[in-house]
Length: 210
Image (cartoon, rainbow, N blue to C red; front, side, top):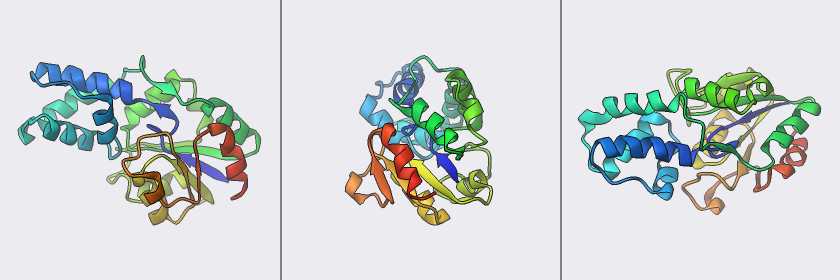
């Protein structure tokens, strides 16, 4: 079976990194920095949506969108110092591969930073397919990126947000909900085949769908 993962808020905790980049941009605009909770609340629909939400929160004009997005993406390509794996992720991925599953990524993070952070963390060889937020003309919750990551094979999707839950539902695949990420809704409002808070539990959950 193919196990497709979201990235930010699912496999990696990148919110402190994203906050640092955003606050460097806001400092240049003479605006107050984002809190970590604000940052987490803005993550989920890709870099353009993050910048739009940041602008709205700090009263920056639409005309600044492209300039701020360019500055954000330029810094994002090489920013890894504050990004960490969630506990148990590496062992869970290794266990799933030993059991014969094929692993893939489907994220709204741009493909450049996605590949760069996977390489930095030593995870790039673990994944057969990596689909970023700019790999296709559409991004999640459109199901097309998830279908591209699935390559026509039976799959489950592992993610942390309402965007991921909607993507899985629209793609017609089971959704496994990691509850410790960046979801913007109460967990009881998320429709999922299963929920987990510890990656040690993931291989056993996956086995129910294999």
